[in-house]
Amino acid sequence: MVEKAAGLVTASPRFLAAGADPAPARVVLLGAPLDVTVSYRPGTRRGPAAIRQASWDLEEFSLYQERDLSTVPFADLGDLALPAGGVGRALERIGAALSELVRQEKIPFVLGGEHLLTLPAVRALAARYPDLTVLQFDAHADLRPEYEGEELSHATVMRQIAAFLPPERLYQFGIRSATREELKYARTHTHFFPGDLADPLHRVRAELNGRPLYLTIDLDVFDPAFAPGVGTPEPGGIGVREALAALSLLKGLHLVGVDIVEACPPFDPSERTAALAALLVRELLLFWAA
Image 1 (cartoon, rainbow, N blue to C red):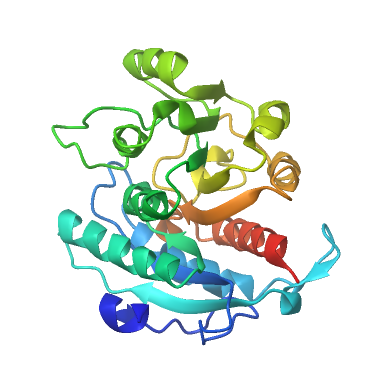
Image 2: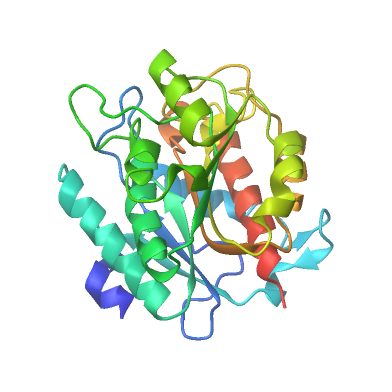
């Protein structure tokens, strides 16, 4: 079982309306408080707990979808116990936990944590779905081959993924920060949509139909006015209504895994970043409503 293998720390409280038993669950929430390679503002290890806490200010019922979380078979296993300072061992533990969830035919929904956690998550899903496609909502391209001499970094995570998945299976939305080299790579190899989210997603939705999809949402895709509590805030981002419109376009697609990353609570005393993340979690969970 994933609980024993991963050294889980029980979340208190769990996410709104979540069960504790993964056996009947279709979707499983799992915290990965990774906070090792953050290059500007540390504190992402506190993200999963803040998102769970903020969820209790929401209604279980979504007025956007007119559905209730009580109709979703999902569980919250808590947080992975990750070794302090050991990025390699931490990634191995995340990968092992997600591989076990996939083996149990669960849909993993990871709460982060810095963006590097997406690397072992995608590896685990790609082993089950060889034709996996990755959707990235982000302010940053994350396509550097290395950052400050390190290949494993939140700034290199998408380039690392493109090393084992064909890069044309990477769709990047909302990007507004990249080096010249990243821009050249993206325009040549990935599906690259700078700045916007909903409109380009609408244009490519038909070609995504039927594919197994992994969705990664870096909260810095939002303008800092909506999400100031992130590791690397970037002005000029999207708003909440555009994000909800984009998420609505994902209904009916084959989502096999999701993560929401880079919540950094120490830099948001208002807690609105965590509240926004919790809203996104609720709306995505409702995609699997009975």
